[in-house]
Length: 168
Image (cartoon, rainbow, N blue to C red):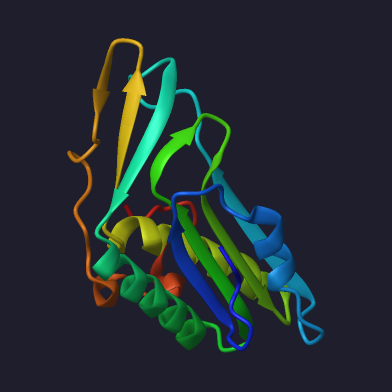
């Protein structure tokens, strides 16, 4: 998975391990004093499910990439000093401890970098058609019950979201 050479947005889906370090380095710019990288890692449990052994992600790829690009645009509309944005998500089998999603942003100041990173991951989870299957010792589930895909324009501006509130 290669970073774009002449762009400020890098989005993608990959069956291969995500380039976390490369994404963190790619967002660094001389005009930016802050970078934030969020690395979502597959864990061995979830609510009511102990001993999760593997995750599997499936995406509606024709819709996922345009939605990731729209999230980047909305992020820049809210925080114009954001310079670079990375949103990469694994599809296929993801082993426990492997990265499932990477978000990285750079901006002139840390407050906008933190807010934009949080906005990107929360909006991705609420609006991008990516589904997760968990397999654990006594069962498996695609986890479709709680997910309702929202349109990006339905997501409130971040200033209206209470601290700690999650969009999904």
